[in-house]
Every structure is written in structure tokens, then in C-alpha cells.
Image 1 (cartoon, rainbow, N blue to C red):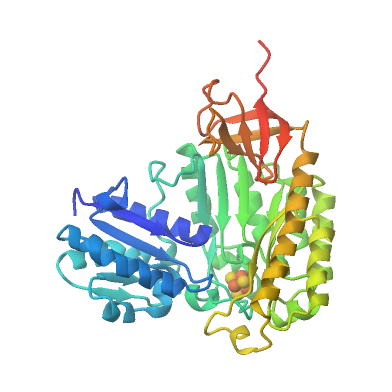
Image 2 (cartoon, protein in one colour):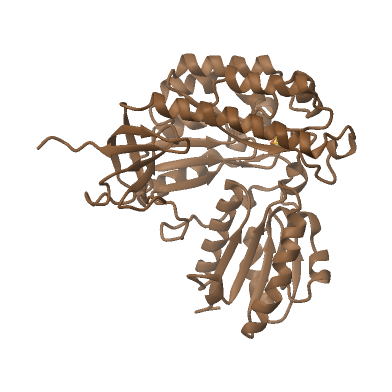
Length: 457
Ligand code: SF4
């Protein structure tokens, strides 16, 4: 496979981005080279996502277009992975004769072998669930893997989900919860820090459920896991690791120890992305979220006491089946009461195979759209107000690279996960991966503008 070039097209969440990094590393370890673009690639892998509406159609249209790409150069290979591959499996091979291999969300390790088989003309699909720790046994991302993120790395701590929210397909596509051994997580973080990584984001579908089944059964020691807050404490002790983030926690597992960790652990960033989905108890129950609005707001209050400068962001769904005007108003109230500084909000759309898809009581599309607009208007106001409150303050910015705005600005993130663009940053030769103190000068709805503070003399 030497000298063949590969490209990966990634859809979806950070979990998928990280899975693509793992596939990149596996392919590089097999002697392939990352292509500068898909047109230069011999091997193209599509990593699919099924969270959004019409994901399957998106894949079918991608695959349709790839017939031509494949015909342009003999010997080209196309593989499909991710949640849609997990759901549709080998039917994809029957439907698309130019598709070479299909791998499920637990089968990343098989990609090099499947590719080798495909080069010999053997088409295959592998989507079996792997309930063992072996699925975490993947080569570590090397710093040169092109992620576009410098000095930052994702680290998987758990996979799968046992929550079965009524709107969500993830438990079917990612399987049951499984937590990775803490010793392996620590070893990976040590190695990342040794290679220059300053910031890690711990990943899991319900990341703070880490270890919970082992702790409940009393076999955490044998399983090599522990409560999530304890894991954070262990990682916080690793010298040279500047910042720890995690995503996405579930409110049900947000316990007092985790709140206390935000007060006590210096490396834990003052930003929590805590999906709430709705502000109405009636809708939360229909969503099977297993907490109430008051429970959520109680966590927020605890976090604010622990960390007064906390930046809270969330996920919200509008137009869930049966959502009344009063339910929606409660969502708007919750956005205000929780002081969300940002959120991802979506119109509900049914996912086949989920309980909510069978509920009926659909909300008319125009009404859902109107609610989404109102919610996003409110969020924009709150985001801007938060950004304005930061003007005049100092922030430590971890530089990512050139700003999207050009003009010699460079861009990075502060501990609150806000984008900070720095004027004069490029002139000062600030490299990606440096942490620089800056004074915030201006606020916009999407970012902050700052100026680097240089040491006297
Ligand atoms: S907690 Fe709910 S929304 Fe999140 S992945 Fe699990 S089922 Fe889906």
C-alpha cells in the first residue's frame, strides 16, 4: 500500500472527527500518505453521521458522485464508515457497485485489512459490535496527523450510550456504554503532553457517565475505571498539561464531585457544554431525558458557586412532537435562567427507529422554524452581552493559527472556549500552540477581538 494517498471526508460531531484521526493514523501506519486533497487521493474514506435529517441521502448522493471520481483513475478505492455505515451495513455494497468496503463504529481497527482486501478486489462490510476494551486499542494520533488543531487533542474515555433518549439514534449506532481503562487514558495523555500537546478534550457520548456501571457493580478496581471526577483529578496532575475539557456530559451524571472538580482543579477549563434540549418538564419527559428543568438549573447554580466565571453552553431542540407554545416559552426562560452564553439549536426531525418518530403530534414546519428563529435571536443577544462583558478583561489565548478574518490577525481560544482574534498577532510572530495573554478590546456576536499583552522590557 506504500505511496498510495488517502483522504477522509468527515461529517458530524467531535467523536467522528476523532475517529477520522484514528483512521488516518492507522492508514499512515500501513504506509499510506495523507493527500493534500481528494482529487490527489487514491483512497477515499467517508466517515458518516446520522444525527441530522437525511444523512443517508447525503451519503447516497456523495457515493453517486464518487462513481466519476473513481473512474478518473484506475485502482481508486472508496470506503464508508461511521453511524450510517453502522445502520445500513452491507446493503451499501449491494446498492453501490463501486463501493469497496464498509466499516462500523466499533471496527476502525479493521480498516487497513479491509483496504488491503479491497486492493485485491475483495469487497467487505464489517459492522459487528465489539464490547471489549480492544476497541480502544488504537495507535495514538501523532502530532503530524492533519487535524487543523495544533497542540490540542481529543482523547476517548468512553463510548456508546445507554440512555435511549426518545429522539436519538446514537444508542443504535454506537452501541452500549463502555469505559476505557484509566491507566490507558493516562498513558495516552502523558504521551500527548510529551509530544507537545497542551490541551485535551475528553470524549464520550455521555462522558461523565465514565466508569458508572463499574462503580455501581463494585468492580471499578478490577475494570480499571473510576468515577469521572476522580479521572479528571488524575489527569489534572499530569505536568505540562495546561487545559482539560470534556464533552458531552449528561445532566443526570453531573454529581457534586464533578461540580467540586471545577472549583479545585486548576487545569479544568471554566467552560461546560451541558446539553439540556428543552426547558419544559413535559417535553423533557417525552424526550426521556430523565431530569427536570429544576434539576438542570440546580447543577448550573452549583457550578456558578464553584466557578463564578463559568461559561455555560448547551444543545436545544425546538418543535419536538407535542411541544406547545407554553413549552417553548419555558425553553426560552431556561436559556435566560441558565445564562447560556451560546448554544446549538435545531428543529426536531424524526429519526427512523427512535421512539419519538412514532409519537405523532408533529409540529408544523413553519411553526418550528419560527420558534427556532426566536430561540436563536435570544441566544445571539445573550452571546453578544456575554462577549461585551469581557471587554477590558485579560484572557489567556491558545493560538490556533491565522484568523478567518485575514488582515494579519491570528486566532485562538480562551479557557472559556471563546474565539479570540488578535490584532498584530502575526506581526509579533505568535506561532500556533503558544499561549499568550491578551486584553479584550471589542466584542462581536461570534468572537472577541484582543491585543496581545507583551511582557515589559
Ligand atoms: S444521552 Fe440521549 S441524546 Fe445523548 S447520545 Fe445518549 S441517547 Fe443520544
